[in-house]
Length: 338
Image (cartoon, rainbow, N blue to C red; front, side):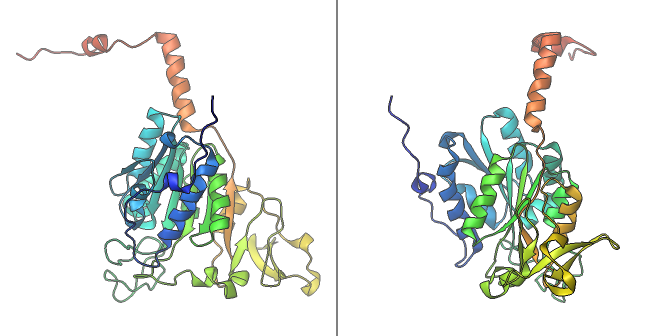
């Protein structure tokens, strides 16, 4: 028997015209995902992309796999149904900050707490792009938009904090144009059993251009980006001369400079992906006062939901035998309509 033909990026690219605005960060994410797919060694026919509503939700049209462009905010629920119907499928959820955290907040929360084996990729551009630039749940205070012409007053929702609060077992963050870093994060997310939640900083050049420039631009990224590595001290800075230390008096994280006041690497926090409390503190770090963490923030695997569901079905069948639909209809309280 001949070995199966090695898939390439072309095998995962459709003939559909990609219709995003010029300069949209979605292009970079799409190319990264298409390039990644052959490396995962999954049969193409077993791969499913599920999206909700929004600019990001065009994604399934551009992936040469099975896919569903579903209802606003309900992609996690439909993806849950897909995974439970056939646990062998490799299911990806593509969503945005508005789709997943506003109308879809409830559905995202329950997928996370159940720990269904899905990869949820949340494109965060801190704005509603598809519906012409209204402020979103993640928009910064003061964001001027058609729905907040004098500036938003709402405190923004933190996607990674939300995911941790909902019980997510895998939480990570990356950046649309950082293909190498995003690829490694997505590989980790895919290998994780259970729900993987990945927030991706994504630029909207039309309605919220440059919102992440401080973290993305090479001139400033050294000072504003903290690249997390499990088991490694939290060091950052253009000259790698700064770090994150735990202030034991206030039980909070603080920025310190190596060499000042006798500070050494031994004083810095060592990243532990399994520490949920540390993960929560990391998600609160915001530029320019702190560097913003990218990479795997939290990873503590547990049994995926679908395994528990099928185990319960097996146990019930062994105990009660196969169900008889006709008997079920005739059991309990019945009545005759004439």
